[in-house]
Length: 158
Image 1 (cartoon, rainbow, N blue to C red):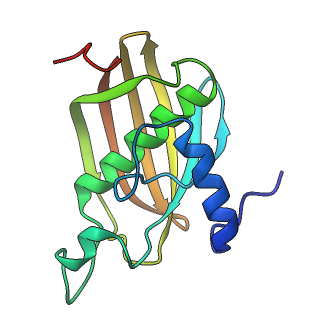
Image 2 (tube, helix red, strand yellow):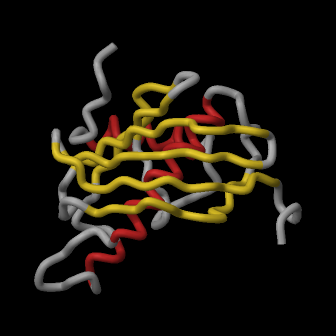
Image 3 (tube, rainbow, N blue to C red):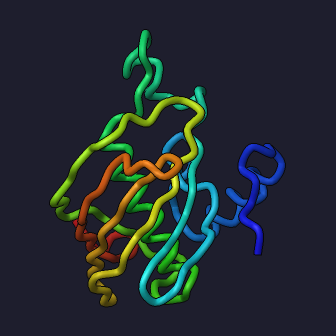
């Protein structure tokens, strides 16, 4: 199977509609464009950070860079979407970050960069997800982290 060409705006829009079926996030806070692989061990997804992203206006106007917290959020969204796609979590699940560990930022992500997200499922239960992820630009590792999410529905977690 050939991966979706995210440079084609129509393809990207179609793929994002599929992601919107998996995640409650919406623009401007949806950071997954396509899932390429999802199996028992891992999720591989991609996102293109366009120059229109809201945070580039202030981070930093003269030298725009994707904030590190957005890269962590992007990895977590990819991990959650992959679990919903496989039917491990229901499509009305909400994922709440509870902890983030072992975070390292190794390469700046700039406007126009396509980020490939490789997410490993460390532990998955109906109420908790532990995952580790790496974000790549090309073959270069840009960021890595581990995180724990609590899982619930609206009103379950306060």
